[in-house]
Image 1: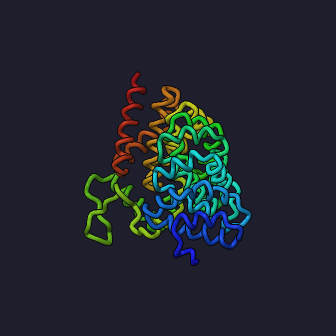
Image 2: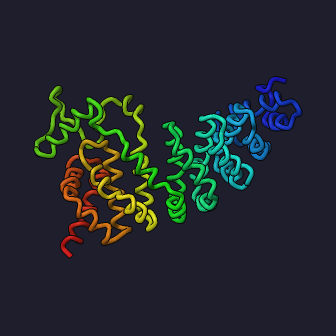
Length: 343
């Protein structure tokens, strides 16, 4: 019988077939069906597929392994499937191994994306974070040369760190120096022709309170929402520095995170990121990280920030030309700095 004509229970039964070709056809078809809709996902899970698919996560066949990982990724869209995957130790261990040793880049990426999907459930974050191999596997993927791999890894780490106890675990594993390297090697807004035009306009706006207009148009320019006019180019850009800053902002909510950031001499770099030549999300996330560091680390961090000569003027620039969230964070940080400076 053609696999496309089989019911979900029949496909699951075929996973146990003696024929390797039959097994391959079944796992491929289950992956495709799990992608379609929640009804198919529920049927597949109810047929007992998850523990059987877990057996294929360590397959020596790269295509089979990729299909198994992606099938679980698709199934994990349903919360009940998330819980079943987490409850099955072979499943979770196999996903972690696929993150580290997947035979293809897509397998490793989809395995990290599966972890990210599982971590949407708040109640599983502490348990998943307690498994050291999970964090180390994600750090290995984060250190990849492939942009999508880094993005999948950082999303999973971000959701892992939404649980307070995991922040110390991730910091201890050595994530801060790696994130800092992404930020130091970042692409700036001024690296593009469009960016140079926009930063020039931002400077004019900061020095002139009148409405700013594009020289090529009579329409006022909205610089507080998006400096990049070409959305297709924005989508192609590697935003790893912005994602790294978002994770650092989360880690700065822990004493361990602040300590690691101070050891990495992060303050001066974060202040540098407030300047108009940086991308909007970089400015926003840098402002947020500095505020979190000051709130968590107290006077020592505040004094370190105040010692940066152009910090106040840079924050005023964010107030003038930053996003709504950046302006809010900059205002709160300026208030905190001024109170401390007077006392």
